[in-house]
Image (tube, rainbow, N blue to C red):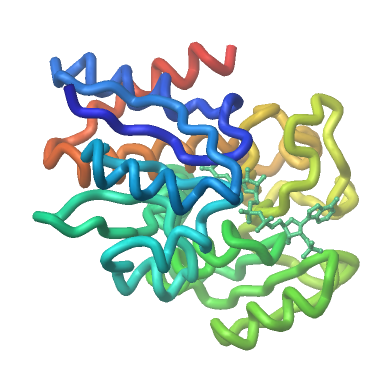
Length: 267
Ligand code: NDP
């Protein structure tokens, strides 16, 4: 049986096992997707094990997305540019790291809106924001502005990718077509956290959230109230998951089955 899994710490909250196992079942593949909850000081030993046991593929999440890079045989140019690995696969005898988070951002947006020609604000300046910038640049966004709690982090990112930056407070002075919520504020908090004032959202905006637990975060509720179009976090999860699935199995991911599994976990 082929073994895959999510490598993270903590990892128990992940929807990836349900999503990928539904995909394997639908295609009748002799494969299982597990949860590998590995602390930082055990990462090196775990990767040795991946090689020894020939684990077929990994999804990589916090806190390992950067630390795993030097432990692989190769990191592809996309992951190099984003600066993080979120998917690992074998190519012949080489363990390769790539990043498909950007495909998740791209496809989740394209379900609802064009990206080309749009003015876009990203809230947050961490790894997920980096993947978002990559997706927006690939799709010819008109302008990209990174707003972040810590200004220096926004500045660093904006200088690297050549885009605009500012504090979260500066949201009041920009009027974007699309807002991407890429901070971790409010993760796992049912009542949510206000990242920008809800009354600054308008019905002309598309608001995309990356957090999927809870599904209806504060910004999603505020955006709905304002009449904006909304994209919830599981759309990104599903699209990056489908991209990883195809890479691992060389088969088209059974998207509807994977979507059904995620929906059922969330409801
Ligand atoms: P990082 O830890 O790299 O970055 C976290 C970001 O959130 C930083 O910009 C940080 O700001 C900001 N932040 C944290 N707490 C607060 C707060 N209370 N108020 C304002 N800003 C805050 O995380 P990632 O970029 O890897 O992930 C971001 C989110 O995206 C996570 O919630 C993650 O679960 C989600 N995600 C979802 C995916 C999906 O498939 N749906 C895929 C990948 C990520 P500062 O610089 O000031 O510290």
